[in-house]
Image 1 (cartoon, rainbow, N blue to C red):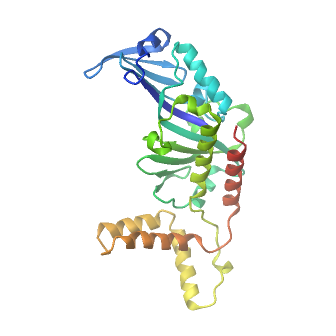
Image 2 (image 1 turned 90 degrees about the horizontal axis):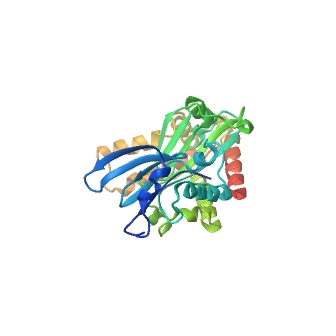
Image 3 (image 1 turned 90 degrees about the vertical axis):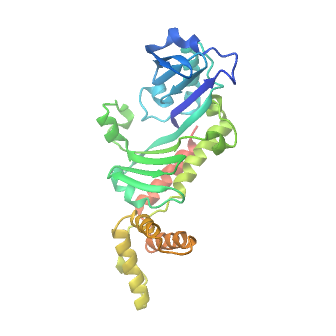
Length: 307
């Protein structure tokens, strides 16, 4: 379930570590001078870019690609441990105690339809900004974390990444939960590489991946004729909701941003209150769509049986 995993070792906290011991085992080595730390060496091991100096060593890359050669397959806990040990063996450096700096928890969801058909049914998410850059990609951002949904088959073909035989011909929706910084604050402690394959931490990450998806507002496919309209007030409410939905999930956020820009309300709490009411109106009428149920069911299944 892990893809990009960045980590590093600082000699101040690990005085027994000699980062430069890895130099004979790196490929594509180049040198550069840094005024703060002196000479630095940049090289590669599997999918990782490695930057080493006499003071520290950092790793940036995909643990999943380092294992499979692609990141379409799902990295299990056992494969995670095997890949960490493989990197350690190649470099003759124990990396299990390295501190994590970024962690992507992800999996591919095989869907009945093309991934682009599912994205409009994913609405707003509390404390995140929803951005749909293309019909095939959707992001939720805040300053520490990101959720990403996109068509993995299209991305693999664009990057000329080989698609495993068992996944060919399938619609593949990628869902990634990215913790980009401050992992210590996110998990209330330092997170080390060895934690990735400890059973409690592995399943904690999977549960977070699942929970972050579940709190996204889900948008149903609706019909005005299917709504319970008994008064003119009901009719106006349904019409407004239908027009609001037709304008797209970003409309509420853009409207609130414009109100804030012109300081419309004297009380700042009114902005969040109005946003909640509009988002509720956006999603409250009508039957839940099959696309929503399918995604929730499959993501729940992945989380439940991840190992």
